[in-house]
Length: 310
Image 1 (cartoon, rainbow, N blue to C red):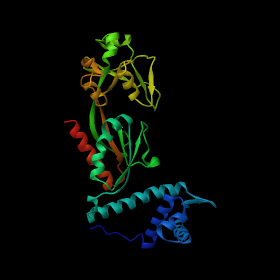
Image 2 (image 1 turned 120 degrees about the vertical axis):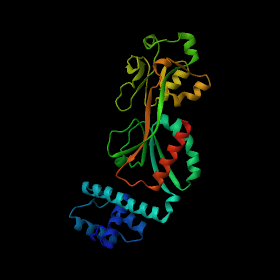
Image 3 (image 1 turned 30 degrees about the vertical axis):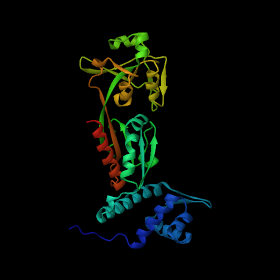
Image 4 (image 1 turned 90 degrees about the vertical axis):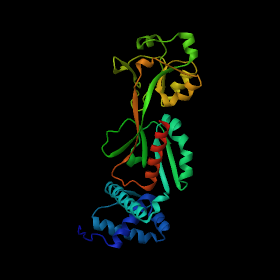
């Protein structure tokens, strides 16, 4: 058995909790009101903590407080440690079977509307005590700065600090409306696309066109083209244009599968896109103990997406 020396007494641990609450609320007074203490007691507690650490945790003015750089680092580490203690106690006491709390989730627009949001009512029914805040955008969030618990991303993140759980390999294809084909004809090869109106989506992160991919002789390669029509921010704009006869789009099949079933879109050049997939993953920081709420969400979404792809 490992021998543990006693580095903290109950007063010091209490000071850490008070510090985290003051940092969270941005006020000694609000922290005191929340915890049933006086502002002076909170101030003295944090002063003892600063004296022990020999650093200033807060920059104070007459109107407000804010964390110093050292205080921000200490806050991030302390909140993770306190969360881990709470989740471990909850697991041991059996309370993890009924998870509760706020969960902040970031997901791209297309995956949200066509995969994630349609399955959420079943999650709400199963876990009524979990509150979810969704960020639906194509921006890659920063977990620390933006305060999110989970993100869904296209591809596998290279950041080694993140855990990635693959959701699915999404198939790609090239789609167009019957109206467009009746007017302009059907391209038979990728080279034929040069004579057609191909719809271009510009990546929000770079402003560059999202590359079309074609498979020739078993090798994927980018199909480069110039277009008089481009869409920014929302890739569904390309799909809507294609459905209305405005041009040809490349899209993930999960986005357009209902439109294909209803005959609003048809797939073309299938021999040149067969087998093309890109993976979607759920990611979360690896240096945090997976809370009961995060675990419930991850397990639920993985199961639901797996059922959709059977």
